[in-house]
Image 1 (cartoon, rainbow, N blue to C red):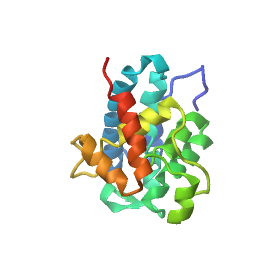
Image 2 (tube, helix red, strand yellow):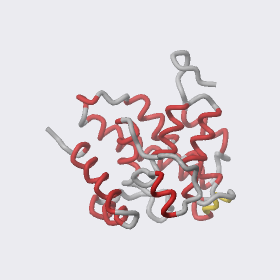
Image 3 (cartoon, one colour):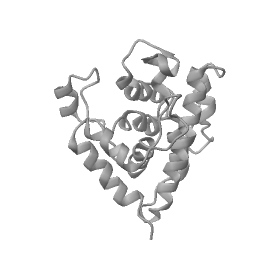
Image 4 (cartoon, one colour):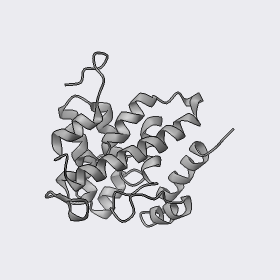
Amino acid sequence: MYRPGLATLNPVEIIAEFYDTGSVAYKLLLNHGRQVAEKALQAAARVPHLKPDTTFIREAAMLHDIGIFMTNTPGLGCTGAHPYVCHGYLGRNLLEQRGFPRHARVCERHVGAGISVADIECQRLPLPLRDMQPVTIEEQIICYADKFFSKNPQACDREYPLEEILTGLKKFGPDKADRFRQWMNIFERTE
């Protein structure tokens, strides 16, 4: 088990604890995690003044979707019992049980552009009634980077353009697109 300051966390080994390494879900999850990690590290490099923890970003980006195997998402090779929207808090539970609370919060807070208590209540989402919006700069960077890539096998090799991401987020409320637009202004800026 990982002990802060004593060992290096290996996301691939943690993922392999829960996934058959020959499965479709495992391959899609690793590919997606690597894409998100690369994009997140690019975004982090644009904001050195905010002092993002790039080691943590790399690890957490690889692990952010670890809970998908517990969802009923056959297109991703997942045959669990829960709706897909639950994968964030389910991943949080997994990583908290293994002693990774900071990584666990990324799992829960990356879904959509973050999910508020009001979202959960208004949409009657099958989620614990708590705020699930990204707070730290690392959580925001990973949530932002995640929107550029899909795990869907038909679309997993492409990066979504900004306008397509914004259009998709608007379906969940103008506040989601506005939050992403704010992140664009921060993480896409080159000086």
